[in-house]
Image (cartoon, rainbow, N blue to C red; front, top):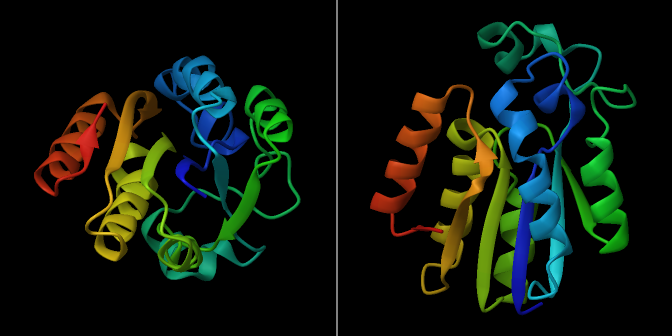
Length: 172
């Protein structure tokens, strides 16, 4: 595991369904291209994963839109992304919240030479995972690919990129 690409939550509910946006739909080709890019030795994809009780959770109380319920169509990867992940034999990590401590633990153990993040939403799950990775691998280059990310809104996307940059995560 030398150069790792993390594809964050590129699921139907964030692309074209419950919480989808035109900006999310627009980044799918760039995200799929990066997943297929052979310079990344390892591809790991996260899946936002909730249960039927989502509305009773802390997140559900703050974001009352049911999404990414395990087993639903909305929980599945966007079809273009699913194909690219399959081609790369990507590792899948389900996560019940914004950032994945399982992902951070895995990367800390493996000590990759670099980590690049792409995905949705820049201002929630991408930034959460980027900061977790950077805090665990503080001497490792961590990057976020702007063209393969989208936020809840364009303004929030740009704000998240600025925060990541200030935390020494390179925006590429």
